[in-house]
Length: 304
Image (cartoon, rainbow, N blue to C red; front, side):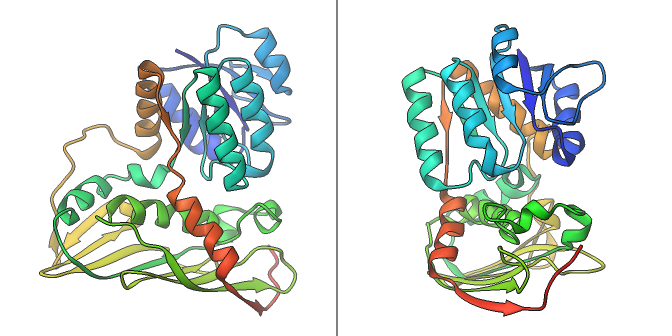
């Protein structure tokens, strides 16, 4: 199927374009971006112009920041195109619900992607935990914003989510692997005095689940979820790529397709073939709850 990719920034160049190039399901047929392009691919700077010029493109993948994404998604859905959304699927929960209603009315597929759920060991972790009693779980998600978002001030503007930009990846894994849902009970959000979104957060959930997010980590990056059960301890590390149970290597995934984004695009191909919609908003709801319930703490200014 022919697909258009909108928003040619770092995540598109690093992940989306290589995944599409390697996929047997997709042909990248056009891009939409104010500045970015992909060599050899027809480029547009306006979504409406692309939709009008290329009726042969059935699917649009949106990889721009969340705040402008709704307008692009709405235009594509109203033009009868299937839509794939980079995480988070929007700037607000309400607009995500609105897009879902539009997609159902238009009869097109809509996919809220959570790339960290497609890490190699997330599915085995979910299966291993399925019939166990969870005693405690803790997330440690600490990385360097200067490395992953160099000079990208939008992440600290309203809608940019701050440390929840990576933190929502951890929450997407948590909501995938726990056998029962949890909800937020308490949070502290650390805002640099010169920024609009938090640079760190500490969260507490029902079920004795806690999380520590920090965007000021230097040196080795930490993306770990530890789950203590009634008989063993599971540790997912490297963002879900490594699984250990009681210090030994855990069961492996039988899925031979490598890479988070290749799996996302395979999922999208299946959704389009089946006419399905996948708009799981559970990770996003936890973030919204944190902004609603969290105590605000002012910390030192942050500059790139």
